[in-house]
Image 1 (spheres, one colour):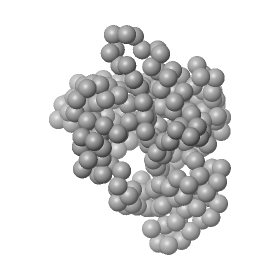
Image 2 (image 1 turned 180 degrees about the vertical axis):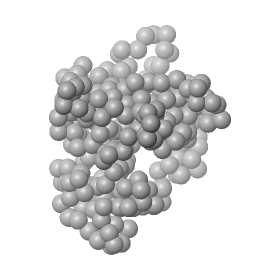
Image 3 (image 1 turned 90 degrees about the vertical axis):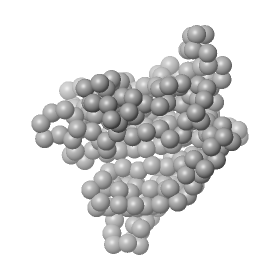
Image 4 (image 1 turned 180 degrees about the horizontal axis):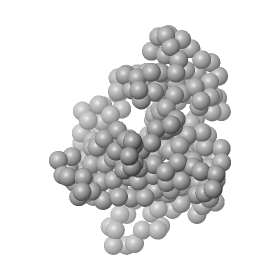
Length: 260
């Protein structure tokens, strides 16, 4: 998708991390990179954020880099859809950015590997009716990542179906697919002999993979206000045992990080 827009991963990176945005980060093994509580790193880089992090960016119509990028992606996906899709408008009011660095972890079906990144999860943001589309933009410097889906957590894993993602890919979810549960079940890291991510221009990507969720939660706010508040309330973004640190983007891909 990025290639069709004439963009590389490096072109869009700063648009996904605009100054003024704040989020949470840390280490999956409950050992944040900075400690004890209250320690700070000013002018930090991605190397100081630990294994993973996440933040939201609410969009405006002022033509800033994030809004312009999302509009381009939505328009490109919209024009590529067949008329039979029934989707007449693809819009967004925010993005959620999650990023992950494996740092030696191995995820996949092989021996001595994690079966999944963090188990099966639900999408709680569906309004409950209509197409309710959302997009996943996949980025990173890994070769590929497998996302697996099934109808419910109770279904046996043998019934799952997989989507292989490579950096720069975009996936559209709508209608019943919004009700599926999902899990990241395999990550193929980068090797010197094979460089699929370079095709998407990811030579400077600072993490193994990132999920950029492009969504319109205005209908959710109107029809399921309690769920909208649960998803977007500041309390849902406080550091916890998995994300021990708080970060604020101060300038171009530079962060102030504090252990909480």
